[in-house]
Length: 157
Image (cartoon, rainbow, N blue to C red; front, side):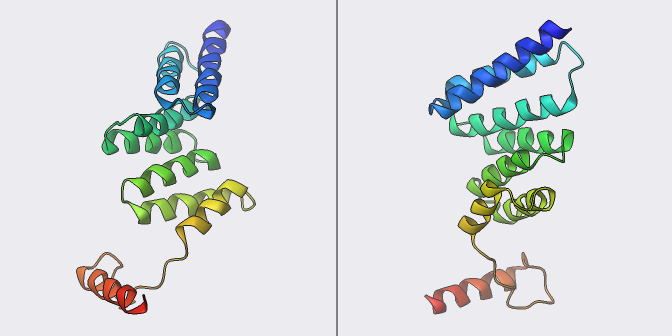
């Protein structure tokens, strides 16, 4: 059992190294291998969560479908909701797939877990502060609010 855990962790660390070197496709294979190996044993759930999160991140960079990428990252935060890096990965893929509101929610959760996390703080700065909806009594996603918000943005520019 310990050998399986060690092999899964080795694959994870190899994947992280490939990711640091800018080779997401090679990293993706390492993370998939870690998931497969860890499925053969009852590993700590938190370890498996990391494998899923980084697998999703690399899948995006390797041209995977947005749906599958988000599924993997969401599964990771479900397995380990107390890990800010997993929420940060979810925020990243949510933002690049056009789900900015989900990105904010994920970063908000990450900053609640670790208020001083420099990566999360930087990501929040990059996303910027959202303005209040024009009609505050309607949901932000209401088509009227969306249209008025776009008009407000174009007039301000």
